[in-house]
Length: 192
Image (cartoon, rainbow, N blue to C red; front, side):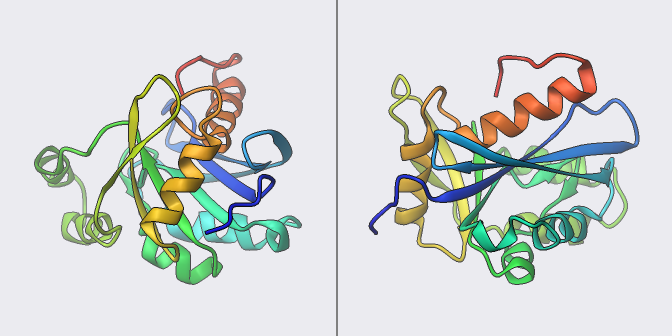
């Protein structure tokens, strides 16, 4: 795949869990260098409305026609409000890449879901994300892990590695994290 340096990527992350209504921020960036826009929505803590709210945020944005990739910080937002990336890909007609710092502990996730309503549906949404691919980033050699829909894993890995400029997480996710944390806590935290 030929990667355009200024490909428009919407990175999405949630804020700290301080209430039952969780802020979700989208940072629209040109590659790993330029912030072009910021989107926001709210989801329910441990709810089931993440797909619906994220799809509406994306497709309802004036930036929608420019977005080429949607990048998520994992597939669970607001606690265990699970994003089914297969459904998000269908609803937005955009490739979706979920990026994780660590390979998920599926047994631990499964056990945690048993404490919530509709655990089977939530777990199936997690499984719908597909196989997990390890991606080496240029940032101190630390890998991240991805799942993707609407794009080949090798192409998704290239985009993730190319946009991991200031940390092992791609810049669109790092920006979304900084913005959402800053809004909710009054200041941002370094960890992204």
